[in-house]
Image 1 (tube, rainbow, N blue to C red):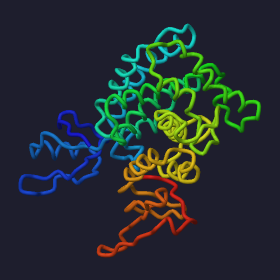
Image 2 (tube, rainbow, N blue to C red):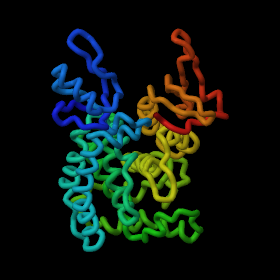
Image 3 (cartoon, helix red, strand yellow):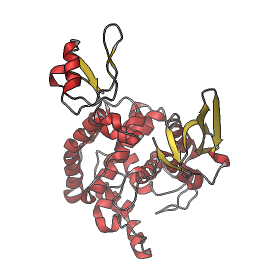
Image 4 (tube, rainbow, N blue to C red):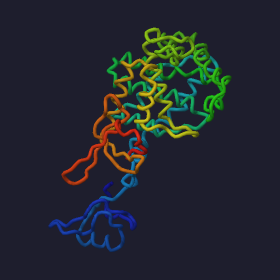
Length: 357
C-alpha cells in the first residue's frame, strides 16, 4: 500500500486500511472503492491523507510479489543498462581476442548486487529474469557470476576467493559463444552427434582465453573442468573429486543451479524445492558434497514460512526442513484456533508441491 494526499485521490482506488475519526468512529472501511461520497466524508472530517492499495497488494504468490517490488524493478533496470556493456566485452574477446577488464566485471557485479540486502533476494530476482533467445548464453554467464557471489557469501569465502569465483562465473561457459543458439537451446532431445558437439565447449572456451595473461589459472581450469563430476562421469577428461580444481567444483554446482532456475522459452523454471529434489536425486555423487550441502541448506531454509499448494489442492505452511530429505519439508496448518496439523512430505510421496505463495 502507499499513502497519498486526499487531493490526488481518484474514484476507483481502493482503501488499504480503515479510516477513523479521532474518536475512533469509522469513516470508511478498508477495501472500500473510492467514490465521490467517500471523498466528501474525508473532506468533512478533515482527513488529509489515506493509504490505498497498490498492484503488489493484490499479488497472491511470493514470486508475484517479488516481480512487483520496487527492488526488483530497480534490479531489472540496472541489469538491462549493464548487460550490453558486459556482452560487448565478451564478444570482443571471442571475436578479436580483446582482453577483458576483470576489474570492470567486478564493478558490474557490485553495481547489480550492492543494494540487495539478502542473497536469497538476489536469487529470487534472477529466478524471474527471462532473456531473449539471442542473449541466453550471455545472460547465463552473467547470472552465474551473480549466483557465484551469493553462494560465496553463504560459504563464508574470503573476499579474494569470492572475487575469483565471480570471475570464473563470467568466463566458464564462454566456449558456448562459439556454438549456434539453435543447438544450445534446442527444446527437444539432442542427438548423439549434437551432444558431442555441445561437449566441445570447454575446449572451445579454453582456446578463446588461453593467451589472456590477465586471467587467473582458476578461470582456465573452471572453463576446462566445469563439466567434470566427482564420480568421474563428467567430461572432457573424466576427472574425479580432488583432480577437479577447487573453483571448478563450485562452478559445476552454480552452472547446474542456474540452468534449473532460469526460465526458458521451451520449459518452465523449477521451484527451489524442485531444484533441491534434483540435487538429492543425482547431485550427491556428482558434486562436492562439502560445497553442495551448505548451499542446499541455505536454499531450503529460505523456504521456511512460505505457503505452498499441494497436488491435492490443500494449502500448508513450510514449517521445518527434513535434513535427510530437504526437498520434502514438514508442513503445518491451523485446523482450529488452538490446533495445528503437521504433514511430513518425506512420508507422503504421493503429494507434490505445485505452487509457492
